[in-house]
Image (cartoon, rainbow, N blue to C red; front, side):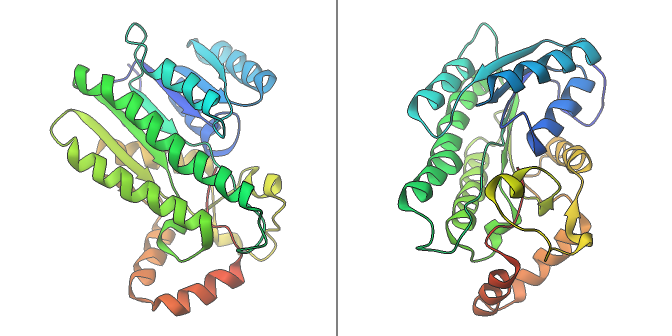
Length: 265
């Protein structure tokens, strides 16, 4: 198999695959010869992406249209992950979104939808994937979180903090099984994320923006190395070091001025 920075894998399933970090994972893994299951809500866009990756890299790209804010969408992906005849050996839980507005400015329905996608879907899909991986003695899960997990910043940050804690705990429980779990914690990434959420980015310095393709390459290297948390850029590693020694009250003020949303997708 081509590529030396990724564990041996047959098929990878990626949620939120049509844009941003998810699309970067799809490009990288397809280039390395992995077959793909691409998951998102937009069927037409998924089919276009699958055709392009197949034609360019000669891999098989399966399309699975699913809305992970619904039980039916989660169940459809769970079913595919549980298929022992066509096993998934890498799961990338990337689907996610941001809400524009402070606490109480965002509707309760939107807040609960965020928890459904960021927490419940991640829990259920990770569980569905890992059951088969543990039987086979190999596999990997990348749960895309954010550096927002480490700062006090509303429901988004809280949900991403849950992703990090859940991933680390599950990784400890699966130690020695051959299954690797990693929480990926990027900072600001140049994707469609902020535009879709209606968030301005003019106040974000240029140096804070990351390239999705470079981020994914670094993340896959960290997965191979057995890391359970990946902050894939020296700039953000340094910032997270400062976060650890900064009083929480001061952090809250800083993150309020830089906007509701830190991170990826």
